[in-house]
Length: 254
View 1 (tube, rainbow, N blue to C red):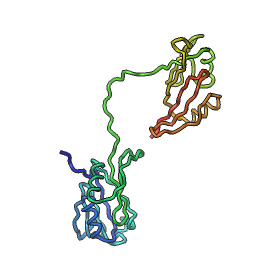
View 2: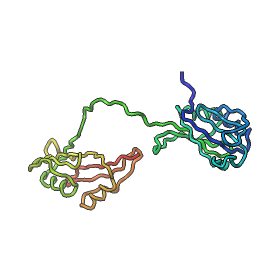
View 3: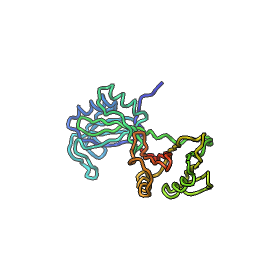
View 4: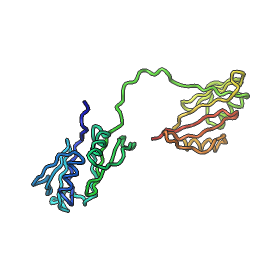
């Protein structure tokens, strides 16, 4: 049986509200907090408090704090952040109670899925849940590296091009075969034959697409346009070698 969503991280705040009854109704009926009247707060005047798991919000209708060491933000300026065990279910529950939260979205910079809702005084309330999963043990990998074969009618000229223009180095070379590498990437220059009549291609993951693009263009490489950022999280550009084989260089990003 699925449990109701709950707040999981302690929150303790004081809010100045214009209409106490209206705030009590919102936090109780829309957000599902338990609300009770109080006669004293934790360092400031309070007339009510809302509780949900480890979260506690105390409400005052006064504009300033009694204790000058506590900052009481002007109405509508507070931002509260609640971590939950199921942000999607929390969102659905708020909607079902008549609330109007924002759509769920992923905030990649904090690795959380979040939604926002404003209380009657304009205070901003964020509800969030981490979508970053803990590392799990992986089996020993079976596949390790790929060595793309790029056919050339003139292998010797192709090797020279990879050395002088594309920044590769020689691991092994002869007139009709070349093994070239740059950092952790290795390519094979092979003779064009009946078995290899067309062109080859490969995709190479890199650290900085813009820096490599500038480097290769300055060396006279046949660069196919500017780097492009794609919605699937890769920024890439393509280069054609002397005989039309295509290498696409891509930088992952979030």
